[in-house]
Length: 116
Length: 111
Image (cartoon, rainbow over all chains, first blue to last red; front, side, top):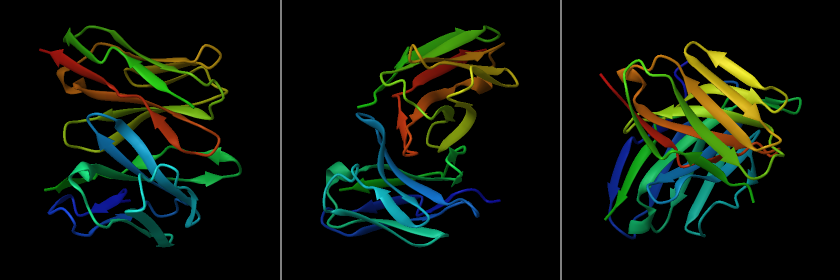
């Protein structure tokens, strides 16, 4: 398996522009997570999905952030409009959940976002 | 609210030394605990997963222990090598499945 795939790997944009980050989870995994990593705050959960349904989006910083999972093999995280404080590394992760058991969570390589 | 703390924040040791990284969490009602490694500019690699009912897990030179009642976990690295240099992250999972991370311990193993 190719693991969790994220694109783009790097994104540089100007304040006010729309940014879309993409993620393809590991085939067969039914849970998908979006995290953000900064020096100041470390790794923080933004939102996660089970079976394509958003379960907890309490970590989404504000209405400028939105996430979708239209099918089991694709998810997007959108920031509109982007601001310099959104600059961070955004990670997507996936795992298998079933029968009340959570398995190992696997992370993608991340998208490094810089908003100028 | 669950909080995860890792001590020390940074550690430098000579090659060959055995070392222990510490992780503590405030809410003992965890589902499991996972240790990750992160190399500079890279994603996270899962090292060990300990279920709440387990006391330890081993993989090669790595051994992770869990004491849920006291809210502590340790990662033991035997015979450290320069290739072990990385940031090690501890994360606890609640019943909802989300991982809550510590800030990590940056390890440097000098030849």
